[in-house]
Length: 166
Image 1 (cartoon, helix red, strand yellow):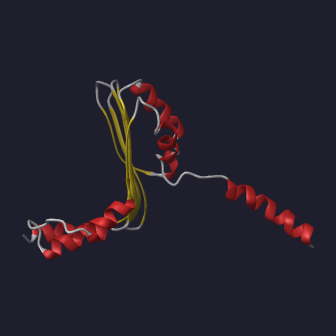
Image 2 (image 1 turned 180 degrees about the vertical axis):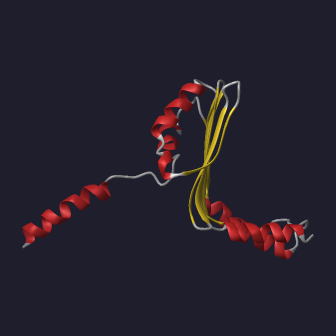
Image 3 (image 1 turned 45 degrees about the vertical axis):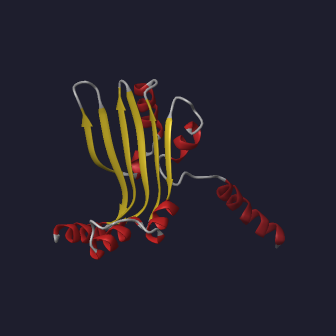
């Protein structure tokens, strides 16, 4: 009996041992975070939680607007940005090959006559976005931006209404 249980659990241990990226940029971020050719930005979701507890001077916003802003950002888990001007187009082509874009919905794609490329993708379920991902490639500019967390579109609508009332 123990042998059968062990044989059944063995495939699960290898599946749990594999680290799957949480978002499109995770693999690249960890690969290039120490590369001096890249500018790197990481903002933890904790930062957005701290805003609520901080005594920020938000005098220009009324109480309803402040609440709407905090409702939108409270579930953001992080923002990651990678940027380089070195071998930019090669980096863009590499990213296009490696990113599993079939797991995302394409929001828009722009390609200019100069060869500049901008693509935006989301992962969502109903009215809730779990990731917004931008991929930018040009002859002298490559950037990847990922916003991970829960962005409820109904909360964005509430924020828009609160701002429009004033």
